[in-house]
Image (cartoon, rainbow, N blue to C red; front, side, top):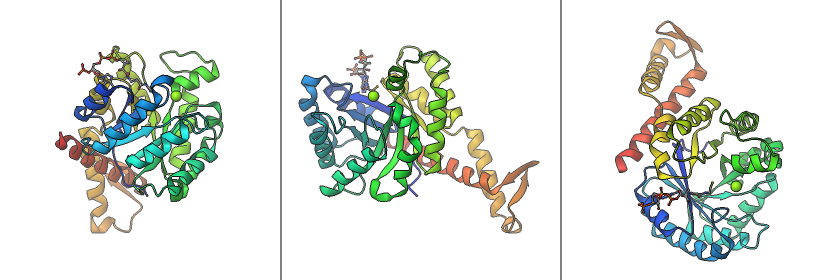
Length: 296
Ligand code: COA
Ligand code: MG
């Protein structure tokens, strides 16, 4: 099992934007995606690669996860990007435009061939029609630690484009893809992060979409602007109420008389061992959030 860690807020920044790479060191996002793919123009790709590798090697990002998104392997830049990314030893490399399990397996083989450090995991962009059709097979690659897959990231803008669906505020067209991918992720013990909210000046709409994602089971949301970090962290953090209730469940199961029991009563409510698993996760995430926040 991968260690439990918060991935509430995952901020993208264009790799060509030096100011954003610098500013990110002071932003309280749980994870940062330094992008070489769609937010970087073709003419700026090679320069952006150099900037991103230098920024990751320089460090200064504290306890946050740093992820590099290379171009897809089938593009002119893909192989050089992934090799450069591996040399910088980020926490993860986010593979774009995944179509099937082979994309993850190939990337993992490349990392192995250059002895990339064990700490460098793979994340997968779920943004093509085939990524949704084959989400179970893609997530299943995570069952073999050799493949390094720990997290799926929804690419809702690409999915809307590819499917020709309408981007409405209730995400009517998107919900089935999100829900399918959540169960695929959970089936194989992976984390999953929701897509971006493009209208970054609309905080109330953004908050609604964070709540929506959390309700669907997302661990966090990908972000495009620093102003989205604070509301996102707030909505995806365990609430005080959830933490208190989780601690009560843990304490109740720790009572010697409850040790052999599968189901008990806490404050008049039925609580099963499955709730204990959830409670432990909530407390672990809350502790980890506190550690990240104390770092600032
Ligand atoms: N990460 C880090 N810093 C960022 C940032 C990001 N994603 N987006 C903006 N900033 C910084 C700016 O550099 C600026 O810093 P400063 O004022 O301290 O110098 C500050 O935040 C305010 O930026 P603002 O002027 O409001 O935004 P902008 O007009 O410069 O940029 C976007 C707007 C949308 C172009 C920009 O936010 C962006 O590039 N977002 C990420 C896009 C992306 O990566 N997409 C790919 C995945 S969908
Ligand atoms: Mg995309």
